[in-house]
Image (cartoon, rainbow, N blue to C red; front, top):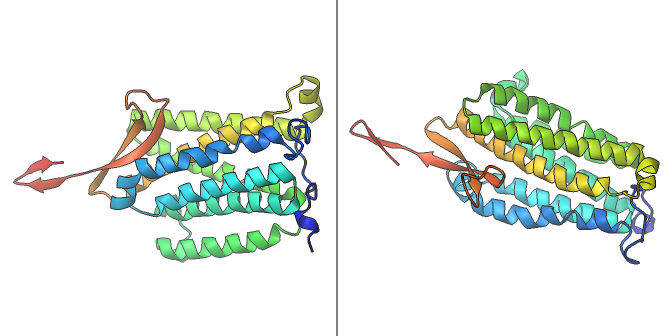
Length: 269
């Protein structure tokens, strides 16, 4: 009964040497690199307060789930336990599902749900529940299966970027895509070419994956939050901004809402 909780019970072991830095943490750098998942979401919750107020308070669910991913991943890499692996992978699955339900443009909905987001969310949640159960049967292949989820998300992002007229949004999309490709490259190299990186004395590509995939994931959420307002809230104007300086596009991107009330043919903020 307790075997899945035992350290080292997971069939997955990443390239970083176990207990090399700390006698109590299996993969120290892979564990530490999850800190960004815990530090940045509270900042995003603050930056998206107007979005949550005027568009959809569910945006904060995405940030909370990203924190759950960070906690689960840190536990997994610290223990390499089977329970830790499943928690890590299922947290990723559910944050993906939440983003899909919240942000997938209605024009891509299956005809069976008839443009109804609530119905689509129900079907997506049921499918995710089935996937959650199936994930417990063959844990060794879960990581590769989850990697494929990024492909349709990346494809939808490309389709939406082609529709945008904002050069600033387009540039952010290009950076998001580049970071995602770099993140996947790090993940594959760590998984498939570990011996090469051990010979180079740099078995930390999975730690880099954590940092890069977080940046790509939250940036994609920012972009789709922008696209959603453009599609479904025509009376509101989304504005892509950056913190701490709006003129520095390598800061933290977020979306705020600029609502207009027309009085006597004049527009006031």
